[in-house]
Length: 316
Length: 316
Image (cartoon, rainbow over the protein chains, first blue to last red):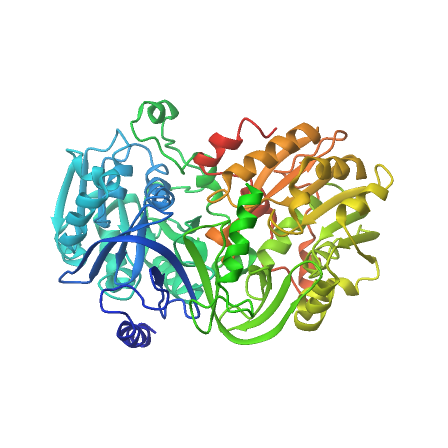
Protein backbone atom coordinates (compact mmCIF):
# COMPACT_ATOMS: atom_id res chain seq x y z
CA UNK A 1 0.00 0.00 0.00
CA UNK A 2 2.83 2.40 0.83
CA UNK A 3 3.94 2.63 -2.81
CA UNK A 4 0.45 3.51 -4.00
CA UNK A 5 0.15 6.14 -1.30
CA UNK A 6 3.50 7.59 -2.27
CA UNK A 7 2.51 7.80 -5.94
CA UNK A 8 -0.74 9.55 -5.04
CA UNK A 9 1.11 11.88 -2.71
CA UNK A 10 3.50 12.88 -5.47
CA UNK A 11 0.54 13.67 -7.68
CA UNK A 12 -1.01 15.64 -4.84
CA UNK A 13 2.06 17.80 -4.49
CA UNK A 14 1.68 18.91 -8.08
CA UNK A 15 -1.61 20.49 -7.07
CA UNK A 16 -0.11 22.63 -4.34
CA UNK A 17 0.68 26.26 -4.95
CA UNK A 18 4.39 25.66 -4.64
CA UNK A 19 4.76 27.14 -1.19
CA UNK A 20 3.41 24.07 0.53
CA UNK A 21 -0.04 25.44 1.21
CA UNK A 22 -2.77 23.59 -0.59
CA UNK A 23 -4.41 25.92 -3.08
CA UNK A 24 -7.96 24.61 -2.72
CA UNK A 25 -8.94 26.98 0.11
CA UNK A 26 -7.26 30.34 -0.39
CA UNK A 27 -5.79 31.56 2.87
CA UNK A 28 -6.35 28.23 4.62
CA UNK A 29 -4.07 25.26 5.11
CA UNK A 30 -5.83 22.03 4.06
CA UNK A 31 -4.47 18.69 5.10
CA UNK A 32 -5.13 16.53 2.08
CA UNK A 33 -3.52 13.13 1.78
CA UNK A 34 -4.15 9.77 0.15
CA UNK A 35 -3.73 8.43 3.70
CA UNK A 36 -7.25 9.83 4.33
CA UNK A 37 -8.86 10.18 0.90
CA UNK A 38 -12.01 12.22 0.46
CA UNK A 39 -11.66 14.30 3.61
CA UNK A 40 -9.58 17.24 4.70
CA UNK A 41 -9.21 19.28 7.84
CA UNK A 42 -8.39 22.93 7.22
CA UNK A 43 -7.05 25.66 9.46
CA UNK A 44 -7.18 29.34 8.68
CA UNK A 45 -3.68 30.73 8.25
CA UNK A 46 -2.79 34.07 9.82
CA UNK A 47 0.83 34.01 8.69
CA UNK A 48 3.38 31.54 7.37
CA UNK A 49 6.34 31.73 9.75
CA UNK A 50 8.70 29.19 8.23
CA UNK A 51 8.86 27.20 5.04
CA UNK A 52 11.86 25.16 3.92
CA UNK A 53 12.79 21.80 2.49
CA UNK A 54 15.13 19.84 4.73
CA UNK A 55 17.20 16.88 3.63
CA UNK A 56 14.19 14.67 4.46
CA UNK A 57 10.94 16.58 4.16
CA UNK A 58 9.09 19.86 3.73
CA UNK A 59 9.01 21.74 7.02
CA UNK A 60 6.46 24.49 7.57
CA UNK A 61 5.29 26.52 10.55
CA UNK A 62 2.28 28.80 10.40
CA UNK A 63 0.29 30.89 12.81
CA UNK A 64 -3.30 29.65 12.69
CA UNK A 65 -6.23 31.78 13.71
CA UNK A 66 -7.58 29.35 16.30
CA UNK A 67 -5.04 26.61 17.14
CA UNK A 68 -1.95 28.72 17.80
CA UNK A 69 1.23 27.92 15.89
CA UNK A 70 1.19 24.76 13.78
CA UNK A 71 4.09 22.50 12.72
CA UNK A 72 3.58 20.73 9.38
CA UNK A 73 5.87 18.09 7.86
CA UNK A 74 5.29 17.05 4.25
CA UNK A 75 1.84 18.62 4.35
CA UNK A 76 0.73 16.77 7.49
CA UNK A 77 0.03 18.52 10.80
CA UNK A 78 2.42 17.28 13.49
CA UNK A 79 1.34 19.53 16.31
CA UNK A 80 -0.60 22.64 17.16
CA UNK A 81 -0.08 24.65 20.33
CA UNK A 82 -3.72 24.14 21.30
CA UNK A 83 -3.91 20.35 21.31
CA UNK A 84 -0.34 19.01 21.42
CA UNK A 85 -0.78 18.22 25.11
CA UNK A 86 -2.99 15.22 24.36
CA UNK A 87 -0.53 13.44 22.11
CA UNK A 88 2.69 14.26 23.98
CA UNK A 89 1.34 13.43 27.42
CA UNK A 90 -0.35 10.20 26.40
CA UNK A 91 2.47 8.70 24.29
CA UNK A 92 4.89 9.41 27.14
CA UNK A 93 3.04 8.66 30.35
CA UNK A 94 1.24 5.52 29.13
CA UNK A 95 4.59 3.67 29.16
CA UNK A 96 6.41 5.59 31.91
CA UNK A 97 3.58 5.44 34.45
CA UNK A 98 3.25 1.68 33.87
CA UNK A 99 6.64 0.68 35.30
CA UNK A 100 8.22 1.56 38.64
CA UNK A 101 11.10 4.06 38.58
CA UNK A 102 12.01 4.36 34.90
CA UNK A 103 15.67 5.41 34.71
CA UNK A 104 16.86 5.24 31.09
CA UNK A 105 14.56 6.39 28.30
CA UNK A 106 15.08 6.54 24.55
CA UNK A 107 12.97 8.73 22.27
CA UNK A 108 13.03 7.96 18.52
CA UNK A 109 11.79 10.89 16.45
CA UNK A 110 10.08 13.50 18.60
CA UNK A 111 12.39 16.24 17.36
CA UNK A 112 9.98 18.93 18.49
CA UNK A 113 10.94 18.13 22.10
CA UNK A 114 7.41 17.64 23.44
CA UNK A 115 7.95 14.04 24.49
CA UNK A 116 11.18 15.07 26.22
CA UNK A 117 9.24 17.70 28.15
CA UNK A 118 6.92 14.96 29.38
CA UNK A 119 9.68 12.44 30.17
CA UNK A 120 11.32 15.16 32.26
CA UNK A 121 8.40 15.14 34.68
CA UNK A 122 9.58 11.75 35.96
CA UNK A 123 12.09 12.39 38.72
CA UNK A 124 13.33 8.78 38.65
CA UNK A 125 14.71 9.26 35.14
CA UNK A 126 18.51 9.60 34.97
CA UNK A 127 19.22 9.54 31.24
CA UNK A 128 17.14 10.55 28.21
CA UNK A 129 18.51 9.83 24.74
CA UNK A 130 16.72 11.18 21.71
CA UNK A 131 17.47 10.19 18.12
CA UNK A 132 15.81 12.47 15.56
CA UNK A 133 16.68 12.16 11.87
CA UNK A 134 15.94 15.75 10.87
CA UNK A 135 17.89 18.52 12.59
CA UNK A 136 15.66 21.12 10.98
CA UNK A 137 12.70 19.89 13.07
CA UNK A 138 14.69 20.46 16.25
CA UNK A 139 15.88 23.91 15.19
CA UNK A 140 12.42 24.99 14.04
CA UNK A 141 10.82 23.79 17.26
CA UNK A 142 13.38 25.68 19.36
CA UNK A 143 12.68 28.83 17.33
CA UNK A 144 8.86 28.70 17.15
CA UNK A 145 7.60 26.35 19.87
CA UNK A 146 9.52 27.23 23.05
CA UNK A 147 6.87 25.60 25.27
CA UNK A 148 7.40 22.33 23.41
CA UNK A 149 11.16 22.49 22.78
CA UNK A 150 11.67 23.24 26.48
CA UNK A 151 12.17 19.48 26.75
CA UNK A 152 15.68 19.92 25.31
CA UNK A 153 16.71 22.09 28.27
CA UNK A 154 16.70 19.14 30.66
CA UNK A 155 20.36 18.29 31.46
CA UNK A 156 19.50 14.58 31.37
CA UNK A 157 18.83 14.85 27.61
CA UNK A 158 21.38 13.81 24.94
CA UNK A 159 20.38 14.67 21.39
CA UNK A 160 21.57 12.42 18.56
CA UNK A 161 20.83 13.55 15.02
CA UNK A 162 20.58 10.49 12.83
CA UNK A 163 18.62 7.49 11.72
CA UNK A 164 16.72 5.69 14.48
CA UNK A 165 17.40 2.24 13.06
CA UNK A 166 21.15 2.88 12.82
CA UNK A 167 21.15 4.29 16.35
CA UNK A 168 19.37 1.25 17.77
CA UNK A 169 21.86 -1.11 16.10
CA UNK A 170 24.63 0.39 18.23
CA UNK A 171 22.69 0.26 21.51
CA UNK A 172 23.92 -2.46 23.90
CA UNK A 173 21.24 -5.06 24.62
CA UNK A 174 18.90 -4.27 27.51
CA UNK A 175 19.95 -0.61 27.85
CA UNK A 176 16.60 1.16 28.25
CA UNK A 177 13.63 0.92 30.59
CA UNK A 178 11.43 2.60 28.00
CA UNK A 179 11.50 3.53 24.32
CA UNK A 180 9.04 6.07 22.90
CA UNK A 181 8.65 6.20 19.14
CA UNK A 182 7.20 9.57 18.18
CA UNK A 183 7.08 9.25 14.43
CA UNK A 184 5.18 10.74 11.54
CA UNK A 185 3.01 8.53 9.31
CA UNK A 186 4.42 5.38 7.70
CA UNK A 187 5.05 7.17 4.41
CA UNK A 188 8.25 9.16 3.99
CA UNK A 189 11.16 9.19 6.45
CA UNK A 190 9.25 7.30 9.18
CA UNK A 191 8.29 4.29 7.07
CA UNK A 192 10.91 1.96 8.59
CA UNK A 193 9.60 2.72 12.08
CA UNK A 194 6.46 0.69 11.39
CA UNK A 195 8.28 -2.43 10.20
CA UNK A 196 9.30 -5.63 11.94
CA UNK A 197 13.12 -5.23 11.89
CA UNK A 198 12.68 -1.93 13.71
CA UNK A 199 10.51 -3.45 16.42
CA UNK A 200 13.10 -6.23 16.84
CA UNK A 201 15.80 -3.63 17.47
CA UNK A 202 13.57 -1.84 19.98
CA UNK A 203 12.92 -5.09 21.86
CA UNK A 204 16.65 -5.79 21.99
CA UNK A 205 17.41 -2.30 23.32
CA UNK A 206 14.93 -2.75 26.18
CA UNK A 207 15.65 -4.47 29.47
CA UNK A 208 13.46 -7.46 30.42
CA UNK A 209 10.03 -6.05 31.27
CA UNK A 210 10.89 -2.81 29.49
CA UNK A 211 8.20 -0.84 27.71
CA UNK A 212 7.66 0.82 24.35
CA UNK A 213 5.00 3.12 22.97
CA UNK A 214 4.72 4.03 19.31
CA UNK A 215 2.43 6.25 17.30
CA UNK A 216 -0.07 3.83 15.76
CA UNK A 217 -2.62 5.69 13.62
CA UNK A 218 -6.42 5.86 13.90
CA UNK A 219 -8.85 2.96 14.26
CA UNK A 220 -11.38 4.90 12.14
CA UNK A 221 -9.03 5.28 9.19
CA UNK A 222 -6.21 2.77 9.24
CA UNK A 223 -7.36 -0.48 10.75
CA UNK A 224 -5.38 -2.37 8.09
CA UNK A 225 -2.12 -0.65 9.09
CA UNK A 226 -2.92 -1.17 12.78
CA UNK A 227 -3.65 -4.86 12.32
CA UNK A 228 -0.23 -5.20 10.70
CA UNK A 229 1.51 -3.36 13.53
CA UNK A 230 -0.31 -5.43 16.17
CA UNK A 231 0.60 -8.66 14.37
CA UNK A 232 4.28 -7.63 14.19
CA UNK A 233 4.39 -6.52 17.81
CA UNK A 234 2.69 -9.71 19.01
CA UNK A 235 5.51 -11.74 17.53
CA UNK A 236 8.25 -9.59 18.99
CA UNK A 237 7.09 -8.27 22.36
CA UNK A 238 6.58 -11.30 24.58
CA UNK A 239 5.36 -9.41 27.64
CA UNK A 240 2.15 -7.66 26.66
CA UNK A 241 0.82 -5.97 23.53
CA UNK A 242 -1.88 -3.31 23.82
CA UNK A 243 -3.56 -0.66 21.74
CA UNK A 244 -4.58 2.64 23.35
CA UNK A 245 -5.92 5.85 21.85
CA UNK A 246 -6.56 9.48 22.58
CA UNK A 247 -8.52 12.38 21.14
CA UNK A 248 -6.42 14.92 19.17
CA UNK A 249 -8.67 17.35 17.24
CA UNK A 250 -6.15 18.28 14.55
CA UNK A 251 -5.18 14.71 13.65
CA UNK A 252 -7.20 12.97 10.93
CA UNK A 253 -10.44 11.52 12.36
CA UNK A 254 -9.78 13.50 15.55
CA UNK A 255 -7.93 10.72 17.31
CA UNK A 256 -4.68 8.80 17.30
CA UNK A 257 -3.61 5.45 18.69
CA UNK A 258 -0.53 4.01 20.33
CA UNK A 259 0.95 0.54 20.46
CA UNK A 260 2.05 0.02 24.05
CA UNK A 261 4.07 -3.17 24.60
CA UNK A 262 6.50 -4.77 27.02
CA UNK A 263 9.30 -7.28 26.63
CA UNK A 264 9.48 -10.62 28.43
CA UNK A 265 10.41 -10.17 32.08
CA UNK A 266 8.67 -8.63 35.05
CA UNK A 267 5.04 -8.39 33.87
CA UNK A 268 3.64 -4.97 33.00
CA UNK A 269 -0.09 -4.37 33.42
CA UNK A 270 -0.47 -1.21 31.34
CA UNK A 271 -4.11 -0.80 32.22
CA UNK A 272 -3.34 -0.24 35.89
CA UNK A 273 -0.50 2.28 36.17
CA UNK A 274 1.86 1.53 39.10
CA UNK A 275 3.80 4.77 38.82
CA UNK A 276 1.31 7.63 38.93
CA UNK A 277 2.88 11.04 38.57
CA UNK A 278 2.66 12.76 41.89
CA UNK A 279 -0.22 15.22 41.94
CA UNK A 280 1.80 17.51 44.19
CA UNK A 281 4.58 17.60 41.65
CA UNK A 282 2.09 18.80 39.03
CA UNK A 283 1.00 21.63 41.21
CA UNK A 284 4.60 22.68 41.74
CA UNK A 285 5.33 22.46 38.04
CA UNK A 286 5.66 25.64 36.02
CA UNK A 287 3.94 23.78 33.18
CA UNK A 288 1.35 21.50 34.77
CA UNK A 289 0.04 18.69 32.62
CA UNK A 290 -3.15 19.49 30.76
CA UNK A 291 -4.42 16.15 29.56
CA UNK A 292 -3.04 13.01 31.21
CA UNK A 293 -4.27 11.53 34.47
CA UNK A 294 -4.46 8.01 35.86
CA UNK A 295 -8.15 7.64 34.98
CA UNK A 296 -7.70 8.56 31.36
CA UNK A 297 -4.64 6.29 31.26
CA UNK A 298 -6.81 3.27 32.06
CA UNK A 299 -9.70 4.46 29.88
CA UNK A 300 -7.47 4.86 26.82
CA UNK A 301 -7.18 1.08 26.46
CA UNK A 302 -10.95 0.63 26.05
CA UNK A 303 -11.80 0.15 22.40
CA UNK A 304 -15.04 0.48 20.46
CA UNK A 305 -16.54 -2.87 19.55
CA UNK A 306 -15.54 -2.64 15.88
CA UNK A 307 -11.90 -2.27 16.90
CA UNK A 308 -12.08 -4.93 19.63
CA UNK A 309 -13.32 -7.42 17.05
CA UNK A 310 -10.33 -6.73 14.79
CA UNK A 311 -7.60 -6.37 17.41
CA UNK A 312 -8.88 -8.24 20.44
CA UNK A 313 -7.61 -11.66 19.50
CA UNK A 314 -4.22 -10.40 18.35
CA UNK A 315 -3.21 -8.29 21.35
CA UNK A 316 -2.23 -10.11 24.53
CA UNK B 1 -23.27 34.27 22.64
CA UNK B 2 -26.02 32.60 20.62
CA UNK B 3 -27.03 35.91 19.02
CA UNK B 4 -23.51 36.67 17.90
CA UNK B 5 -23.17 33.18 16.47
CA UNK B 6 -26.46 33.56 14.65
CA UNK B 7 -25.40 36.88 13.15
CA UNK B 8 -22.14 35.40 11.95
CA UNK B 9 -23.96 32.39 10.58
CA UNK B 10 -26.27 34.60 8.56
CA UNK B 11 -23.24 36.36 7.11
CA UNK B 12 -21.72 33.00 6.37
CA UNK B 13 -24.74 31.88 4.41
CA UNK B 14 -24.38 34.85 2.13
CA UNK B 15 -21.02 33.47 1.10
CA UNK B 16 -22.35 30.07 0.10
CA UNK B 17 -23.17 29.29 -3.49
CA UNK B 18 -26.87 29.12 -2.74
CA UNK B 19 -27.15 25.34 -2.80
CA UNK B 20 -25.74 24.89 0.67
CA UNK B 21 -22.36 23.66 -0.48
CA UNK B 22 -19.61 26.00 0.53
CA UNK B 23 -18.12 27.53 -2.56
CA UNK B 24 -14.56 27.62 -1.33
CA UNK B 25 -13.69 24.04 -2.30
CA UNK B 26 -15.37 23.09 -5.55
CA UNK B 27 -16.70 19.56 -5.33
CA UNK B 28 -16.24 19.37 -1.56
CA UNK B 29 -18.59 20.08 1.31
CA UNK B 30 -16.87 22.22 3.94
CA UNK B 31 -18.35 22.56 7.38
CA UNK B 32 -17.61 26.16 8.26
CA UNK B 33 -19.30 27.76 11.23
CA UNK B 34 -18.71 30.50 13.77
CA UNK B 35 -19.27 27.73 16.32
CA UNK B 36 -15.73 26.54 15.38
CA UNK B 37 -14.01 29.54 13.83
CA UNK B 38 -10.80 29.13 11.86
CA UNK B 39 -11.22 25.44 11.11
CA UNK B 40 -13.25 23.35 8.72
CA UNK B 41 -13.68 19.67 8.02
CA UNK B 42 -14.37 18.89 4.38
CA UNK B 43 -15.75 15.83 2.66
CA UNK B 44 -15.49 15.15 -1.04
CA UNK B 45 -18.95 15.13 -2.63
CA UNK B 46 -19.79 12.46 -5.18
CA UNK B 47 -23.37 13.59 -5.66
CA UNK B 48 -25.94 15.80 -3.99
CA UNK B 49 -28.97 13.60 -3.35
CA UNK B 50 -31.36 16.02 -1.66
CA UNK B 51 -31.44 19.73 -1.01
CA UNK B 52 -34.47 21.59 0.35
CA UNK B 53 -35.42 24.19 2.91
CA UNK B 54 -37.88 22.90 5.48
CA UNK B 55 -39.98 25.07 7.74
CA UNK B 56 -37.08 25.06 10.20
CA UNK B 57 -33.78 24.55 8.43
CA UNK B 58 -31.82 23.68 5.31
CA UNK B 59 -31.79 19.94 4.79
CA UNK B 60 -29.19 18.34 2.55
CA UNK B 61 -28.08 14.79 1.81
CA UNK B 62 -25.02 14.01 -0.26
CA UNK B 63 -23.06 10.94 -1.22
CA UNK B 64 -19.51 11.44 0.01
CA UNK B 65 -16.56 9.62 -1.47
CA UNK B 66 -15.35 8.10 1.79
CA UNK B 67 -17.99 8.40 4.56
CA UNK B 68 -21.05 7.07 2.74
CA UNK B 69 -24.17 9.22 2.65
CA UNK B 70 -24.14 12.37 4.79
CA UNK B 71 -27.06 14.26 6.39
CA UNK B 72 -26.49 18.01 6.79
CA UNK B 73 -28.79 20.45 8.61
CA UNK B 74 -28.11 24.17 8.26
CA UNK B 75 -24.63 23.42 6.95
CA UNK B 76 -23.67 21.19 9.88
CA UNK B 77 -23.03 17.45 9.51
CA UNK B 78 -25.54 15.46 11.58
CA UNK B 79 -24.52 11.97 10.59
CA UNK B 80 -22.52 9.98 8.09
CA UNK B 81 -23.09 6.30 7.38
CA UNK B 82 -19.51 5.52 8.34
CA UNK B 83 -19.42 6.92 11.87
CA UNK B 84 -23.04 7.41 13.02
CA UNK B 85 -22.75 4.26 15.16
CA UNK B 86 -20.56 6.04 17.73
CA UNK B 87 -22.98 8.86 18.46
CA UNK B 88 -26.26 6.89 18.29
CA UNK B 89 -25.05 3.97 20.38
CA UNK B 90 -23.40 6.09 23.05
CA UNK B 91 -26.17 8.68 23.56
CA UNK B 92 -28.68 5.83 23.89
CA UNK B 93 -26.95 3.10 25.85
CA UNK B 94 -25.18 5.35 28.37
CA UNK B 95 -28.58 6.09 29.98
CA UNK B 96 -30.44 2.86 29.16
CA UNK B 97 -27.71 0.50 30.35
CA UNK B 98 -27.43 2.44 33.61
CA UNK B 99 -30.90 1.56 34.95
CA UNK B 100 -32.58 -1.82 35.35
CA UNK B 101 -35.39 -2.64 32.90
CA UNK B 102 -36.17 0.70 31.23
CA UNK B 103 -39.78 0.55 30.05
CA UNK B 104 -40.85 4.00 28.80
CA UNK B 105 -38.44 6.09 26.78
CA UNK B 106 -38.83 9.53 25.21
CA UNK B 107 -36.59 10.78 22.41
CA UNK B 108 -36.54 14.53 21.72
CA UNK B 109 -35.16 15.32 18.28
CA UNK B 110 -33.46 12.31 16.72
CA UNK B 111 -35.66 12.48 13.63
CA UNK B 112 -33.21 10.37 11.64
CA UNK B 113 -34.32 7.36 13.71
CA UNK B 114 -30.87 6.21 14.78
CA UNK B 115 -31.52 6.62 18.50
CA UNK B 116 -34.79 4.69 18.07
CA UNK B 117 -32.85 1.87 16.43
CA UNK B 118 -30.64 1.70 19.51
CA UNK B 119 -33.48 1.99 22.05
CA UNK B 120 -35.14 -0.94 20.25
CA UNK B 121 -32.29 -3.25 21.27
CA UNK B 122 -33.58 -3.13 24.85
CA UNK B 123 -36.18 -5.87 25.20
CA UNK B 124 -37.50 -4.43 28.48
CA UNK B 125 -38.76 -1.31 26.68
CA UNK B 126 -42.53 -1.20 26.17
CA UNK B 127 -43.10 2.30 24.79
CA UNK B 128 -40.92 4.66 22.80
CA UNK B 129 -42.19 8.19 22.12
CA UNK B 130 -40.26 10.46 19.79
CA UNK B 131 -40.91 14.17 19.35
CA UNK B 132 -39.12 15.65 16.33
CA UNK B 133 -39.85 19.18 15.22
CA UNK B 134 -39.00 18.76 11.54
CA UNK B 135 -40.93 16.17 9.56
CA UNK B 136 -38.59 16.63 6.61
CA UNK B 137 -35.74 15.11 8.64
CA UNK B 138 -37.83 11.98 9.23
CA UNK B 139 -38.86 11.71 5.59
CA UNK B 140 -35.35 12.28 4.28
CA UNK B 141 -33.91 9.71 6.65
CA UNK B 142 -36.48 7.11 5.60
CA UNK B 143 -35.64 7.79 1.95
CA UNK B 144 -31.83 7.93 2.12
CA UNK B 145 -30.73 6.26 5.37
CA UNK B 146 -32.72 3.03 5.68
CA UNK B 147 -30.19 1.52 8.12
CA UNK B 148 -30.74 4.48 10.43
CA UNK B 149 -34.48 5.09 9.91
CA UNK B 150 -35.08 1.39 10.58
CA UNK B 151 -35.68 2.56 14.15
CA UNK B 152 -39.14 3.81 13.09
CA UNK B 153 -40.19 0.27 12.14
CA UNK B 154 -40.36 -0.84 15.78
CA UNK B 155 -44.06 -1.16 16.73
CA UNK B 156 -43.28 0.29 20.17
CA UNK B 157 -42.47 3.66 18.54
CA UNK B 158 -44.97 6.57 18.40
CA UNK B 159 -43.83 9.51 16.31
CA UNK B 160 -44.98 13.01 17.30
CA UNK B 161 -44.09 15.86 14.94
CA UNK B 162 -43.84 19.02 16.99
CA UNK B 163 -41.90 21.14 19.42
CA UNK B 164 -40.15 19.20 22.18
CA UNK B 165 -40.86 21.83 24.82
CA UNK B 166 -44.58 21.91 24.01
CA UNK B 167 -44.69 18.11 24.03
CA UNK B 168 -43.01 17.90 27.44
CA UNK B 169 -45.49 20.39 28.90
CA UNK B 170 -48.30 17.92 28.22
CA UNK B 171 -46.48 14.89 29.63
CA UNK B 172 -47.84 13.70 33.01
CA UNK B 173 -45.26 13.96 35.78
CA UNK B 174 -43.01 10.92 36.21
CA UNK B 175 -43.97 9.26 32.92
CA UNK B 176 -40.62 8.15 31.55
CA UNK B 177 -37.72 6.01 32.74
CA UNK B 178 -35.39 7.72 30.29
CA UNK B 179 -35.31 10.78 28.05
CA UNK B 180 -32.75 11.09 25.25
CA UNK B 181 -32.24 14.53 23.74
CA UNK B 182 -30.66 14.12 20.32
CA UNK B 183 -30.43 17.72 19.20
CA UNK B 184 -28.38 19.78 16.81
CA UNK B 185 -26.18 22.63 18.10
CA UNK B 186 -27.63 25.34 20.37
CA UNK B 187 -28.12 27.70 17.44
CA UNK B 188 -31.24 27.43 15.32
CA UNK B 189 -34.22 25.20 16.14
CA UNK B 190 -32.45 23.35 18.97
CA UNK B 191 -31.50 26.41 21.01
CA UNK B 192 -34.21 25.93 23.64
CA UNK B 193 -33.01 22.39 24.28
CA UNK B 194 -29.93 23.72 26.04
CA UNK B 195 -31.78 26.03 28.41
CA UNK B 196 -32.92 25.65 32.00
CA UNK B 197 -36.71 25.62 31.47
CA UNK B 198 -36.27 22.69 29.10
CA UNK B 199 -34.24 20.71 31.61
CA UNK B 200 -36.89 21.41 34.25
CA UNK B 201 -39.55 19.92 31.98
CA UNK B 202 -37.36 16.86 31.34
CA UNK B 203 -36.86 16.33 35.06
CA UNK B 204 -40.60 16.56 35.63
CA UNK B 205 -41.32 14.03 32.88
CA UNK B 206 -38.94 11.51 34.45
CA UNK B 207 -39.82 9.11 37.24
CA UNK B 208 -37.74 9.31 40.45
CA UNK B 209 -34.31 7.90 39.57
CA UNK B 210 -35.04 8.35 35.88
CA UNK B 211 -32.23 9.20 33.48
CA UNK B 212 -31.55 11.69 30.71
CA UNK B 213 -28.79 12.05 28.16
CA UNK B 214 -28.35 15.09 25.95
CA UNK B 215 -25.94 16.06 23.23
CA UNK B 216 -23.45 18.34 24.97
CA UNK B 217 -20.80 19.58 22.54
CA UNK B 218 -17.01 19.17 22.62
CA UNK B 219 -14.66 19.86 25.52
CA UNK B 220 -12.00 21.03 23.02
CA UNK B 221 -14.24 23.69 21.47
CA UNK B 222 -17.12 24.65 23.73
CA UNK B 223 -16.11 24.45 27.34
CA UNK B 224 -18.03 27.65 28.02
CA UNK B 225 -21.28 26.15 26.71
CA UNK B 226 -20.62 22.91 28.58
CA UNK B 227 -19.96 24.70 31.87
CA UNK B 228 -23.32 26.41 31.45
CA UNK B 229 -25.12 23.14 30.75
CA UNK B 230 -23.45 21.43 33.71
CA UNK B 231 -24.37 24.33 36.00
CA UNK B 232 -28.01 24.19 34.86
CA UNK B 233 -28.22 20.42 35.19
CA UNK B 234 -26.65 20.47 38.64
CA UNK B 235 -29.46 22.67 39.87
CA UNK B 236 -32.20 20.57 38.34
CA UNK B 237 -31.12 16.92 38.40
CA UNK B 238 -30.75 16.00 42.05
CA UNK B 239 -29.60 12.42 41.48
CA UNK B 240 -26.33 12.60 39.61
CA UNK B 241 -24.85 14.84 36.94
CA UNK B 242 -22.10 13.52 34.69
CA UNK B 243 -20.28 14.41 31.51
CA UNK B 244 -19.24 11.67 29.08
CA UNK B 245 -17.76 11.81 25.58
CA UNK B 246 -17.06 9.76 22.52
CA UNK B 247 -15.00 9.95 19.36
CA UNK B 248 -16.97 10.88 16.20
CA UNK B 249 -14.59 11.71 13.31
CA UNK B 250 -17.00 13.91 11.35
CA UNK B 251 -18.03 16.11 14.27
CA UNK B 252 -15.96 19.25 14.95
CA UNK B 253 -12.80 18.39 16.93
CA UNK B 254 -13.52 14.71 16.27
CA UNK B 255 -15.50 14.16 19.44
CA UNK B 256 -18.78 14.95 21.11
CA UNK B 257 -19.97 14.93 24.68
CA UNK B 258 -23.15 14.04 26.55
CA UNK B 259 -24.72 15.25 29.76
CA UNK B 260 -25.95 12.16 31.54
CA UNK B 261 -28.07 12.88 34.62
CA UNK B 262 -30.61 11.29 36.93
CA UNK B 263 -33.45 12.65 39.02
CA UNK B 264 -33.77 12.25 42.76
CA UNK B 265 -34.81 8.71 43.67
CA UNK B 266 -33.14 5.34 43.43
CA UNK B 267 -29.47 6.26 42.89
CA UNK B 268 -27.96 5.74 39.45
CA UNK B 269 -24.24 5.06 39.17
CA UNK B 270 -23.72 5.80 35.49
CA UNK B 271 -20.09 4.75 35.55
CA UNK B 272 -20.97 1.15 36.39
CA UNK B 273 -23.77 0.00 34.06
CA UNK B 274 -26.22 -2.38 35.75
CA UNK B 275 -28.08 -3.28 32.58
CA UNK B 276 -25.53 -4.54 30.06
CA UNK B 277 -27.02 -5.43 26.71
CA UNK B 278 -26.91 -9.17 26.36
CA UNK B 279 -23.94 -10.20 24.23
CA UNK B 280 -25.97 -13.11 22.84
CA UNK B 281 -28.65 -10.70 21.69
CA UNK B 282 -25.99 -8.79 19.72
CA UNK B 283 -24.94 -11.89 17.93
CA UNK B 284 -28.53 -12.71 17.04
CA UNK B 285 -29.15 -9.16 15.84
CA UNK B 286 -29.35 -8.46 12.14
CA UNK B 287 -27.59 -5.20 12.86
CA UNK B 288 -25.12 -5.86 15.66
CA UNK B 289 -23.79 -2.84 17.50
CA UNK B 290 -20.52 -1.50 16.17
CA UNK B 291 -19.29 0.84 18.87
CA UNK B 292 -20.81 0.52 22.35
CA UNK B 293 -19.72 -1.99 24.97
CA UNK B 294 -19.65 -1.94 28.77
CA UNK B 295 -15.95 -1.09 28.90
CA UNK B 296 -16.26 1.95 26.67
CA UNK B 297 -19.35 2.96 28.65
CA UNK B 298 -17.30 3.30 31.82
CA UNK B 299 -14.30 4.81 30.00
CA UNK B 300 -16.42 7.54 28.41
CA UNK B 301 -16.78 9.30 31.77
CA UNK B 302 -13.01 9.76 32.17
CA UNK B 303 -12.05 13.30 31.26
CA UNK B 304 -8.74 14.90 30.35
CA UNK B 305 -7.29 16.97 33.16
CA UNK B 306 -8.15 20.31 31.55
CA UNK B 307 -11.82 19.31 31.47
CA UNK B 308 -11.77 17.77 34.97
CA UNK B 309 -10.52 21.08 36.33
CA UNK B 310 -13.41 22.96 34.75
CA UNK B 311 -16.21 20.46 35.31
CA UNK B 312 -15.06 18.33 38.22
CA UNK B 313 -16.41 20.49 40.99
CA UNK B 314 -19.72 21.18 39.26
CA UNK B 315 -20.78 17.61 38.40
CA UNK B 316 -21.92 15.40 41.27
